[in-house]
Image (cartoon, rainbow over all chains, first blue to last red):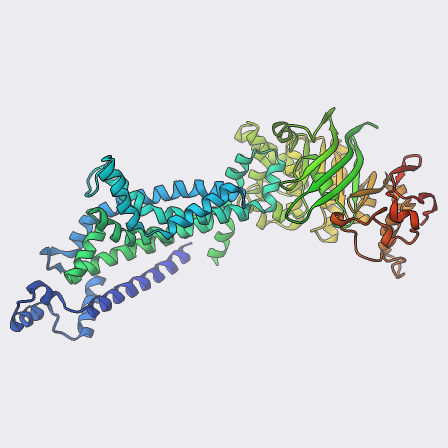
Length: 309
Length: 322
């Protein structure tokens, strides 16, 4: 187990290094930098050069890269020039709102997705199965931001039941959480459906019936848990994607989370914030994947044996 | 000798998926209390389908008619709730491939004890009872084994777990569907010995489904030979296997090579088994039968008493000799 965790930690560090480096390169490929954006289009060349020098942006990219890597290694993400304080502080301030949104969307996706998936997978090819498959395919095909806008039109502007934008209370959470959960719900439903449909053909399901269990007991006691492994893996990966997907949805709903911060930081070429935020998201994704694998090892004793080797 | 279970004129029709048709055609046989009845036949002969109709575990869309008399009720008409009560508690089932038939992610103790736990027995009692059951089916060190998973056991041990599971509900009848087919020969012998012991000591009747005549010769008291979804012959095991009254039984018996001699198989069975979805007219066996005549092509032979206690569905049963 320790050996396994050590290996995963090493892979995790390597992944972080990759993410950090990629972000470093990509953000510098965009035209303009902190100095030009901060000083605006009317700035003189000398002013820009002076600011560049004070920010260290006139050094060669290699020098900047290694000094940056050194900073990241000591968890120093530098100052946000925009907010005039440590970048990580600004990031962490926004982080809880994003986590709140992500957890809410995940809970919806898992609850609704599992129910839809089990109902459909129990009788593959049935009318219910076809209805669920069509419905979930539709959910996956429609862009979430469009669904978000439609929900705002319906529930905020027409019915005036829920606020259309902003954060801070439960009613504010409802629409963005539903919107964010929609493609995720569809994915969980489809994965669960195929897992359950496959497990239903296993011989041990017939064994369970031969013990006099009701169909519900068979599903709950012998089918669902055996179908969950691919679902857990996808959920682990997908929560990470949600953190990224939240960028768009947060913008639609003016949700005061990390996504909004990140979008404006990219626009402002606020390198420190961009790098700090992506670092944090990368950590979350890595931890979630590890968690999914550990949950799977807990679910299936056969996986545990392989992990020991 | 009282009949515990009587199957009368059972018909099973399937639709969709693998084809359409009456795969089981007026099958009748009975299982006597505390005795072992064997169902023999090639794959596709309907032996598994017949045995699974007893507990209502047929593929979706299967239509049944006839009568399955169990304790003065007809299981074919029994409501789902009553059937669930019969399954496991009155009739236990042992499946062919124990690795596939056991849930891979539950400990064997949990699976053996499930029927007890669901019956409301307390956790500690369930564990004690499961330990007894594991011991009863000859699993060494039950305390050590109760918490292992199926993949951590050998094939023979897994089949013993299946048997313990079938016994857990205290059934009067166990349906064993090819219980030794997935096992090696020495393990087969041990499992058959265990099944025979259980019948003798616990008085559990058994319906043993197998294609293997040697298995039948070892454990069955009575046999039912099936061909293409119909009963070809039935009677006391020794007599049927020694002196067949149906050319199909004779061909099967001659197919089993004697272990001690080097003689070639006397009379290999020609042709492929009849497809129960597309049965030949008349006697389904006539295309492969060495003594078939014109009448066999047109007239379906009825199961008739060829001699006391011996039933054969051959027009010329009296001419069959081994």
